[in-house]
Length: 60
Length: 532
Ligand SMILES: Cc1cc2nc3c(=O)[nH]c(=O)nc-3n(C[C@H](O)[C@H](O)[C@H](O)COP(=O)(O)OP(=O)(O)OC[C@H]3O[C@@H](n4cnc5c(N)ncnc54)[C@H](O)[C@@H]3O)c2cc1C
Image (cartoon, rainbow over all chains, first blue to last red; front, side):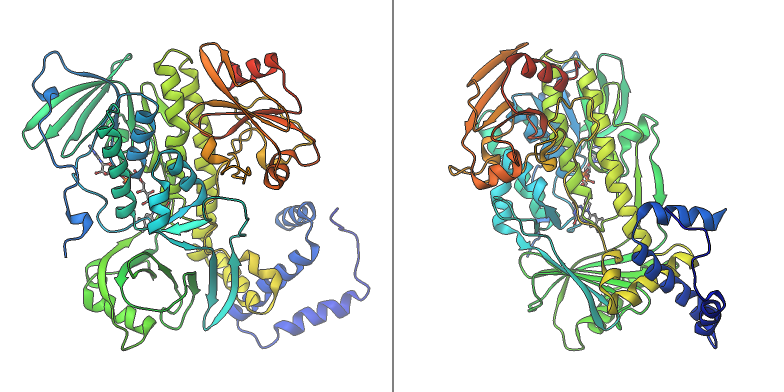
């Protein structure tokens, strides 16, 4: 099941790391980084139902 | 040297039908002598159904087009009596490599499963493929089988008159009329039949152009399918290299959307591309070159009244995955025995609707796979390109991304799940051979299993005795009792000690049980011929 409750220990720390990874990148490079991240996350999650629910949650 | 595709193989000859009145009536007329029309004709003739093939040309496919033929079609060709010469002449292969930029990112092996007579894939030029089919047709003709092929006979008008179809045929000596109880349209992707009868052909058209060159060269590349994304010699695009017999190599270059076709097809420009790929001093000769854009589309149904559509006329796919001719052969495989039973009055026309249902299901599966591959190779939006490139970037370093790389999902046989013809199943038996599935070959200890199957209904008892023959509703079901070998056990029994399989004439499973009972077989047969 997709977890939509808080689940990160250090929310601010993760957010900063995410922005940090994009620092100095062009728009195209940022998009490419995001795409790679999504694919890595998706593979880690693995579960088809969770991924479908995540796609729906992001779209709605 | 004259190439086979420049040689008339079935030259025009005047037929008595051109001089008779009233109009000659045939049981079955096939329009088109491509791979699918020829296979359908051979199948019907072998089953004793008289068949006439009309083609507007008099020779095999110009240039190669299809080159990859998969195991299931080779098995079908074996049943048609011409598989062995194709395998003998073809190039057998099982490995594919995918390169991203300068590096190899991923390779696959088509899981060599032992205990099959035929290889996973062969490469053979389409013109050779068609030539062998014509040879088989001639052989049957010489043996007195009811089969005829008329070259330079172009169908120009059609009407379905309810109990027959009327055709107008143009020849070098003027036009004449014909009638057919049943018409099979195998007249290719631009099917004049489909257009004359006004049926839709819906799906997707892809914008990218592909330059396809068959070159003759002495080269020591391995017998593997090599696919490149963004190689140094074709930046931002893809390319493919694949071996055919007689030192012919298939090379594809993706060349983008807005191109000057005439310019690109100039031999000097093609050679420039080839030298960039193969090296400045590579020596080769161009055999055939062409530029294609690709489509993935199909008709809504493959039967309309007295006309049955098969092959590219019914459905078209992009070639990534080699699902064109391969699936067309599965159409004729599905159709021939059904048409025979209907013509003989042993099954109702409903059986022909099952041809449409089952093969539309197969075509949808092929279109889904070919569309996904084409979307990966030629991303249609910025977002799809971003993800595609992300997959390729990750695939170079991380194993997880490699299965996401899609340079074509190669043709696999279709299992008719959910078909109205499927009878009872037993969950305990192996899933791969469930009702609707094509039989998997196996070493029986006394020859290959598939060599013993096909062209009639059969009852296969493994580790259990079944009657040698059953006569049910005018249809003979032939019994075959075998003792389980390792192959038979793993493919047909699983944990069970014994099983009984009812098999269709196209070698697909109709039903299966753990034991034998005549009443159950009778019901399943009735269902398998569309009465269920
Ligand atoms: C570049 C390329 C690569 C491919 N690679 C592969 C591959 O590796 N594997 C694979 O399985 N498939 C492949 N295909 C697809 C394959 O070539 C087709 O699926 C196959 O040729 C379809 O066979 P067919 O008999 O349905 O139609 P066709 O081969 O198109 O034959 C139709 C026939 O009908 C005749 N005809 C048309 N109109 C009339 C008329 N009015 N009257 C009489 N006759 C008529 C034509 O002359 C022709 O002989 C490839 C295709 C291309 C273009």
